[in-house]
Image (cartoon, rainbow, N blue to C red):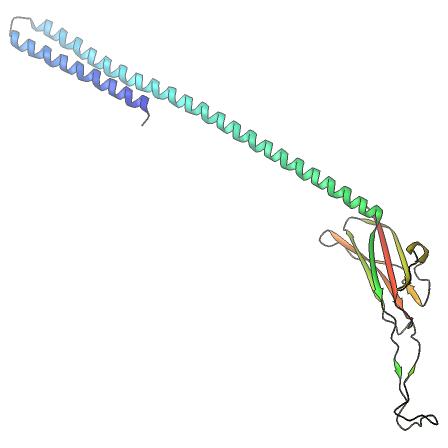
Length: 249
């Protein structure tokens, strides 16, 4: 119970108790006087006393209501102010989160655009082709002066059909548009710059060839893949291959 209401109740109770005591004293005095006073005068005093008691009770109740209403008004005002502050803080937090998300998205988009301009680079090493060995059939005679145990299998060169192709794949954003695909190839033991070893897709160079066209996968989970096939059928040396994929957003 609020302190203001408790104080009003105590004040009303004290006023009522004092009025009752005065009423009791008046009644006792009336009894001692006997018939010395008239009944009319006694009734008037009784009525006045009852009016005083009733007025005190009403005044106490009104005072308690006034104090309670004032306290409720103050509480409601404070509650509205707190709700307004909470709403303002929530709006500020939401705006800050949106600003941070927008700035982050803008930065990420800028980085992806720069990567697309520079190009996504993929490199790989392709081993030399290993052709099938030619072994003499049973019953065939060995050359004169060479035993069958000493005879070595004949080695032949690879063909393009026998070579195992490899695939170079670059991952780019799902919304990106491919603007250029560059392919390069050079012997593994060469230090020549890549710019001097650029190849045209579909054109043979050094028993090696890139596919004529690259393939592009469907966007999935925000990314897509751009792939280029490469075939190498030289049995003499390995090759280094390189692919650069440029895109725009």
